[in-house]
Image (tube, rainbow, N blue to C red; front, side):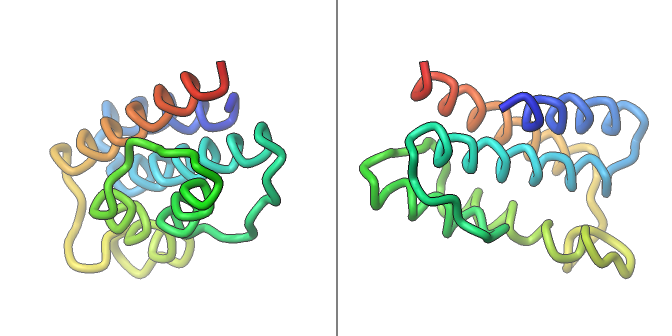
Length: 120
């Protein structure tokens, strides 16, 4: 959870600096880490994946619901591979901007709040 929080805070700093690609990369990492933290917390076998939708499904299979839509999962998944192996943008079809980064940060904040409530 601490690392996820650091990624989220990093994304906000990067947004202020108009560094949109790394902002989104940190958003994706925050959500991935927070979902994996609940797997660890609930003693569920940790999945070796970066797929947010897959992690959400593993949680659902254990009756743990996360406030994260399939569309939001798809958005976050669209960030991972291009951000690790960039050609131009972390988003496959277009360059990110402030609006899309704010959307990502909102998703990450909501997910962190949801998981914090489940752990407490």
